[in-house]
Image 1 (spheres, rainbow, N blue to C red):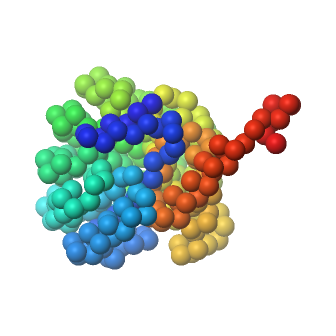
Image 2: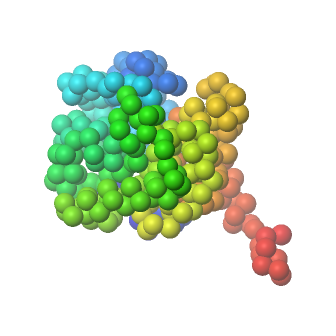
Amino acid sequence: MKLTLKSYEFDLKLRPLVMGILNVTPDSFWDGGKYRAPQDALLRAHKLHEEGADIIDVGGESTRPGSSGVGVDEELERVGPVVEKILKEIPVPVSIDTRKAAVARQMLSLGAHLVNDVSGLTYDPEMVNVIREFDVPVVIMHMRGTPLNMQEFTQYADVVEDVKSELLDRISIARRTGLRQDQIIIDPGIGFSKTAEQCVEIIARLDQFTQLGYPVLIGPSRKSFIGKTLYLDPELRLEPTITCCLWAALNGANIVRVHDVGSVVRALRMLEELKAHAKPSKAGTLE
């Protein structure tokens, strides 16, 4: 399985890619306001690249639970200068984290490589046309409702089976409107219209998503499900985030989306070393 982002090509069978989060917002739950100024955001992008980010995901609208969103003009004002500078200065693919087709179109026109749509192509009906026009991949994430009200929709018979079914429905619509299979990445949407227990369940059973035949992105980074599970504030959630990423890697995840790129890259490298040196015992288990 390969992921092509214009001139960049990744073999997803080799190792999970690390997507570095760059929020240029005043209100994101972890780093809101830190990188709002374009010069600060660019310095952060350089740091993410130096730490080993395979992709940098730039977002100009917080989608934390209860957030109401911003208009197209404000979002473009936030992300436009940053995306333009990254594309000029840093040899790394850029993902635009947006629900809005107008924002995606503008950033793809600048040269962005990927769209990360938390609405799973349900918020803006024009988005799928933009993806098709620019012939780029898209992350179809699972979410019910909007960030403002999504936590009102956490009723599932079986969270894994229901999320899989709803993702497949959205994929089917995308395919019927002209997207190819190799343009689609799926994300089960950790923290979006799900309780903490449901988030843990999804990560624990992530192999059921990786069996669907599409690259899988997982985004556990410092999220509230960790805090509610282990009673930790965001600044103490690094090690649990790394644990989730390693578990995801062992269960077939292809992309992990994180704030702490360097720490996760080092952990994944060690995991690959261990896997490379592991030998099956006579009983068929690892020694």
